[in-house]
Length: 103
Image (cartoon, rainbow, N blue to C red; front, side, top):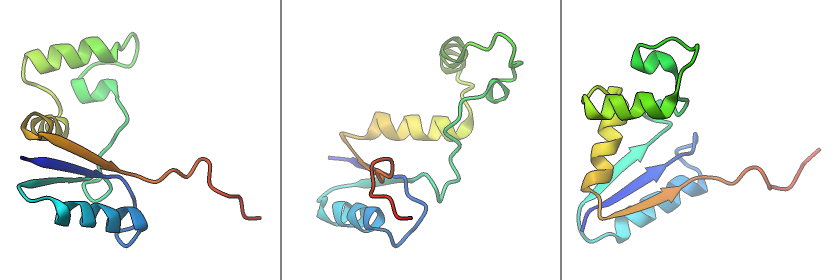
């Protein structure tokens, strides 16, 4: 079984990072990693990623065309390949939106 662990936290010593490491240690077979902050992964979809102009940019059409022509941005292609290989995906990320406020 291949497990993909996706970590999305800027602090390598955070609870989320430690939990991701514990998840990896608990896996008995192959573990793939995607540490999105360490990779400086850009989650924003942009026309420039596909050599298109912003005007009239349709992300879904651009993604479909790029996937069928094998011209997805290289960082996206790498992550898609990991998803194809993985039997299981574990996401570790913080939930900051609803945390207690400190003034």
